[in-house]
Amino acid sequence: MGDLARIFKAYDVRGVVPDELDEPVAAAVGAAFVEVTGARSLVVARDMRVSSEPLAQAFVRGALARGAHVVDAGLASTDLLYYASGSMELPGVMFTASHNPARYNGMKMCHAGAVPVGADTGLTEIRDRAARIADVGPATGTVVRKDLLRGYAAHLRTLVDLHAIRPLKVVVDAGNAMAGHTVPAVFEGLPLELVPLYFELDGTFPHHEANPLEPENLRDLQKAVIDSRADIGLAFDGDADRCWVVDERGESVSPSAITALVATRELAKHPGSVIIHNLITSRAVPEIVAEHGGRPVRTRVGHSFIKAEMARTGAVFGGEHSAHYYFRDFWYADSGMLAALHVLAALGGQDRPLSEVVAAYTRYHASGEINSSVPDVAGAMARVRRAFAGRGEVDELDGLTVTGAGWWFNLRPSNTEPLLRLNAEAEDERTMTTIRDEVLGVIK
Image 1 (spheres, rainbow, N blue to C red):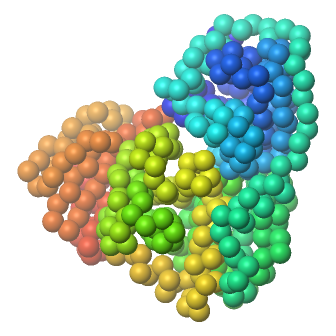
Image 2: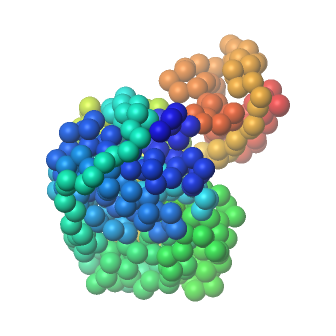
């Protein structure tokens, strides 16, 4: 099979099809997954990409060749796969490339109970074993098709009660991706008037990429919210594990504000609980958590770190700047849909517009994440460290974080590209802009 290091990342498998990831590779990974996890049964699901079904079938073929019983969940969002893994106590694999362009695909893997498989928890061993498999051999296991969409939708509705809220008009941009499959089932029977955008499943992404972190991809949603006089807009990424929120004015709502909002709701149910936030989220998040009697815990960026820290501390909720939201009641896994239900419940449980609701959770001015391509990442990091020496408190939990009087920034390298990612925040916009531009000037 050869070297698979190019497509095996820290948390998942991701590559261009078929140049880097093809059916023989998927079959070998399926066999290796069973060998490493010892799974006698597992669940497999996929998104709507053109390559997802043949890759998933190849993976299943490899798993069957090792005698495993496979539950084929068919089309699903990633959080539906987590629901399947958690509710059936099975290891699982989701075929998706999330927000990446159409030519990509990949695999997100978990142990039983939706526990993530990462580089330190089996992924490296799966890679090495798969690389040694030339032919998986004949199938000896069995496969059964199971539709889990209704169970998933019903389970989410038990976690957030929306039946008593005021009627809301909700625009949802599914980006021709998996939210178009899951949203109708989850919203069914709720006092929500759905205005759908791009619900037709199409892995070529004919309207825009399913990546709500890019402002360009939100423009249709923002216009539709204003034109339809909706109460809220929601945009999901390709596998619908992330959700971005737009208020009634068509303005983006920071994921940090959503993190703080959901945290206060969870703390009302579970007083004194731990809330996880990564080091890129706004400083407003730990402040608000503490004000509501919770215990904020700061982590590195990345879902494997968040989930591990949640399990260690028993945290009730965790949020990231990238619009990933994690719930103890959902096997410590992330669910964009569950976060959306919390926001809808908060909005519909009172009479103010969303812009006023989230204003209480927005305290600082943030730059957003700014990526800089640099030929020498280490050298650029060193220059910034020298430039800000003595000007603030320094920590290196994840990259370089410098905290001064009324401002902070974090600069960290990408795991996969020659990029530096900058996030800056300050009490006023002028200070934020000054710090942001100074760091970028040193980098470039």
